[in-house]
Figure 1 (cartoon, rainbow, N blue to C red):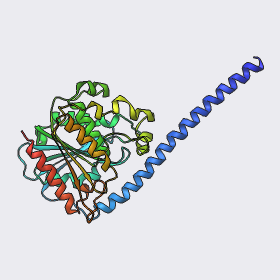
Figure 2 (cartoon, rainbow, N blue to C red):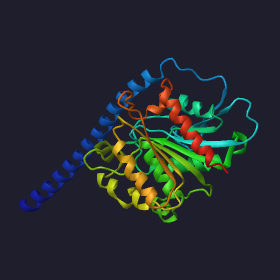
Figure 3 (cartoon, one colour):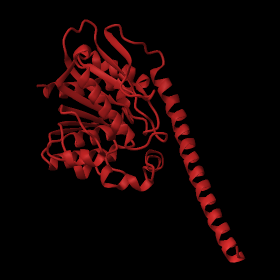
Figure 4 (tube, rainbow, N blue to C red):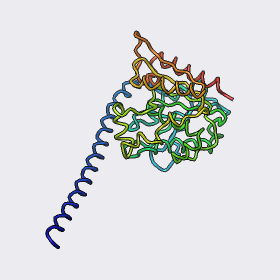
Amino acid sequence: MDKKKSNAMLTAGLAVSMAAAGAAVYKNSDYIQAERVRQLFKRGDEIRDRGLTAPDDVARVTDLAYGADPEQVLDIYYPVGTDKALPTIISVHGGAYVYGDKNLYQFYCMSLAQRGFTVVNFSYRLAPKHRFPAQLEDINAVMNYICSHAQENYIDLNNLFMVGDSAGAQLASQYCAAAVNDSYAELLGLEIPSVAIRACALNCGLYSIDRKKDKLMQKCYFSRPEEAFSDKMDVMGNLTGDFPPAFIMTAVKDFLRDRAEPFAGKLSELGVENELHVYGDESNKLGHVFHCNMKLPMAAKCNDDECAFFRRHME
């Protein structure tokens, strides 16, 4: 082998090694950043829920597997004494796609059950280990599960509602858009069961992606950052007039407050019934996902309002 060819091969090999090393460092940085977010959020949630206990008037069916992965589990809550199907809320938790599970949402979801609903509270696979569209696939798997297990769990398939907050609101909005838009569902690779989501509540959500503000999402949720701006992620561009009636909630100190009005405006432009609610004021500066804090009176007010919205859209 001549010297020139040998040098070329060495250079190519070095380039491949450097690329592999760079990819490994990038991947490792994703996991490190995700873990920092998890620790930060966990501290806040532990303070939020300290001292809370499960209410005696709510029955719990826990740790039902809706998939093969250990993270694919769900709980179902309904009022004690329930003997028939109740209007049913499916809750999609938040956590920046990298954090959260059903245990962190149990008190919030049980409070919804106390209002006369069956509530499905599930964990989904988290980024960066599981990236887009794994989380949407898990929502769809939950929907298929409840369709197959409705009777024994007091689930009313004629009155299904969906709530989501933060990243969960983005996921819920995307799923609701795909559920009424066959071409979008096909683009996302989802075979959605033929049941209707009668209305949704989208809380403190992210509905369109900002290149500068949403760096964590771009870095950890997608295999390639540019996927964030693909047709698959263009929820606003795939909305139709068949999107379910929507209760859109934000708060005066919600860092995603600026995302709510454009989404509500797009729904109005399409003729979709929606209500935009901003909770709090200068004397009560409510923040991001305040409605999950069962110790706050305004959380109870917000959740009452959303459940009343659902009741108005029952069959």
